[in-house]
Length: 144
Image (tube, rainbow, N blue to C red):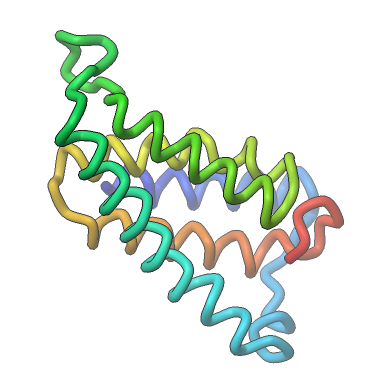
């Protein structure tokens, strides 16, 4: 779990250096309701649906994993939830965002399976969205 937080901080730092992005609280002030939805409500709903309902439903029916004997493996349930999650972001946002959420989605699925707790995924997802909104809305391709 701490790897996800540290990774997000490194990612935010790389964005800051690569794009000369700065933390921008204008979005928070100008669009408070949208900020709250993106950073807090959406992660709860998305994690409940994708890492909760979908992964649980698929996991009860099929137990396929790759690699089968690995300590960390990706389940069919995680793959299907990730494909649907990526598809949602493709439809609601854009192709670039869909690509960018692929690995984090797989990671959250692995965390869900290993910890058994959806709250961990919700917290990390909220933190990632917070970094995204505060740092990346100045980059035209990634604007909300």
